[in-house]
Structure formats: C-alpha cells, structure tokens
Image (cartoon, rainbow, N blue to C red; front, side):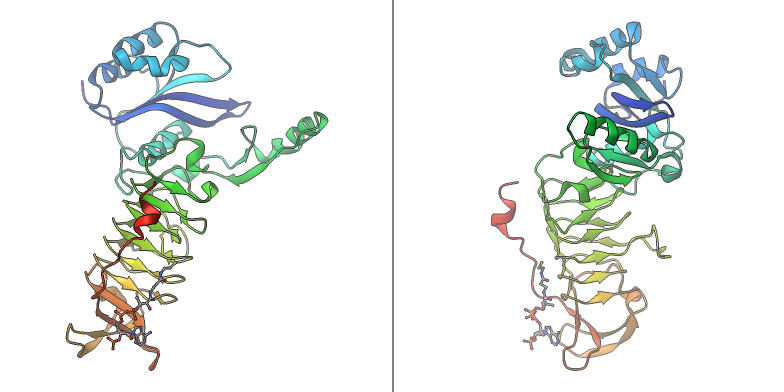
Length: 337
Ligand SMILES: CC(C)(COP(=O)(O)OP(=O)(O)OC[C@H]1O[C@@H](n2cnc3c(N)ncnc32)[C@H](O)[C@@H]1OP(=O)(O)O)[C@@H](O)C(=O)NCCC(=O)NCCS
C-alpha cells in the first residue's frame, strides 16, 4: 500500500446546496498511523467517506486507545455527520473537504506554509456568512434573521468570507491572539507566537515563533523565530496587487511600526519604523565601517542577513547599514503564552 498524503476524521456540515465546512477532530500526514491508513485506503470509496457501521468499527480498532477521545465521532448518531477525508496525494484542490483538510494541516502545525499544493482553493470554497449559529449562504441570512428575531434573539454575522477564523476550528498551543477574527484558518502560528489586535495572519502564511505579530502577514509569507512585526507593519503578499515574489522574513528581525517590505530579509535585519521597502527602491549601501559602497535596487539585497534599513533623516535617502543591535523580544510579554 502506498502511503496516503494526509487524512482527517471530523464532522462535515451541509445544507441543501452541499458542503459548508468541515471540522477535524483528528488529522495526520501520511505514515503517522499505519493501521488507520490501511483502513482508510481500503475502505475509500471516494475522498470523503461517511463514518458509520463497519467502517466506523474498523477505524475504532485501528485507532486503539486513542479512539476514546473520538467517541462522539465514532459512536454517536447526532445531527452532525462524521466523515473520513482521505488525500492520496498532494494534488490541486478539487473539493471543499480537501480544502479544509489542507488548511487544518497548516494550522495544526503538521505542514508549514508553502509546502502544499493549494491551487484551486478559492474556486472550491463558497463565500459564506459566518454567524453565531453556523455558517450559512449569504442568501439564507434574511430568513435566519427572521427566525432568530421571532424568538427574541439576534443573529450575528461575524464575517462574510470563503475562509473562517482559525480559532473556530482549533487553538494552537502556546499562542496568544488579541483578535481571533484576524487569523484565518490555514495560518501557521508556532509555539510562543503572540498576535496583538492589529496583527493579521492569512492562510498559508505565518510565524515560526516565538515572536510578536502586530502587523500583517500576507499569504505565502513566513516570519522566522524571535522576530517582531511592529504595529501596523505589513509584508507584501502575492494574492493581489501584481506581486509575484514570495517574501520571507528570517530570525531575529524587527520590522518597525508602520514599516513594510516587498523583499525578503535574512536573519537579524531591521527596518526603521515607517519605512516601506519595495523591490525597486533605490538603496545606498554602507559597509560595516560606515563607508558608502554604492547604490542598488532593494531587490538585490533580498534575503541577506544583518541589514538595517533607515530613511536618513537628513538627506531623505534610504540606506542599508550593518545592523548591530539584536532584536530582543519582551520576555514578560512572551513568558505566559
Ligand atoms: C531604525 C531604528 C531601529 C534605529 O534605532 P536606533 O536606536 O537609532 O539605532 P542605532 O543606535 O543602531 O542607530 C545607528 C545609527 O543610525 C542613526 N540613525 C538611526 N535612524 C536614523 C535616521 N532615520 N536618519 C539618520 N540616522 C539615523 C543613529 O543615530 C545611529 O547613529 P550613530 O551611530 O552615529 O549614533 C529605530 O529608529 C526604529 O525604527 N525602531 C523600530 C521600533 C518599532 O517600531 N518597534 C515596534 C513597536 S510596535
């Protein structure tokens, strides 16, 4: 038997038009639980298999002792529909169930951003109204509002989007999140990551942790360990605006408040507060002794270590100097995640 790429056991929610979302109680990448893989591979009628009867019993046997924690999935017959979702390989996304499985894999830290094929994600995911009751089609919101108000209650629509907030599905260990609506399912938040209220993390993007995120991490961007993304700072992504270069930020970097970058940074780099570096920005480069050695486009410096970018307060020119100060995360802020 070939290894499966990934699989998950969870509940699918559906309405008259089809699948709305999937929540996974148990998920793994290929090879993690061979007995369970065998059951899923041999019983796989389609990528999504309802868990019931003999199939459920086989899953239970394959899980052994860990089946207890999944009893509601394997034993109960409630209104929720338990399913097994199986991916044989990492192909383009063709259905909602695989989209949710891949987003869960990243947020559960089983896969890092940019390591899976996410082509087709936006095409398969419907735009839904995420409410305090459950997700629903936007066209169903007026009727739901009517029903709730007849009962003296109110319907809260938290967002209208294709991808829901991460913490509605799982809470990664060792993180703090100021505003959960700003972290999408599919974001990677490593152990020790703090995201303050102004922070935003897209799907297939994230912070390795520990680190401080008070700015925006766009799709495809990964921020290294012990780095600090200052208040309202932003890192350019590739989803919109014509950007094609995937930006990454190394370890021990500081992107100052209201600053940003469209080039990658290596380790121990700093961008001055308020300074936005784009790929074509002309930059004067200084050596470690402070002597000017020339002018380059910022893209030529992409990915290098120990850079300090400032806009010279006297000349207005943008400079790249040798970064001498190490970024120290505020220990008191990170000690209690
Ligand atoms: C860029 C930054 C790190 C520089 O800080 P600093 O304490 O001045 O750093 P350094 O002491 O290493 O500065 C190196 C030199 O560059 C000079 N310099 C710094 N910024 C300069 C500027 N904009 N123009 C001209 N010179 C500047 C310093 O005066 C110093 O000169 P010196 O060696 O002759 O004394 C700081 O201004 C900054 O923007 N920090 C970001 C903080 C932040 O936003 N955190 C997130 C909060 S949410």
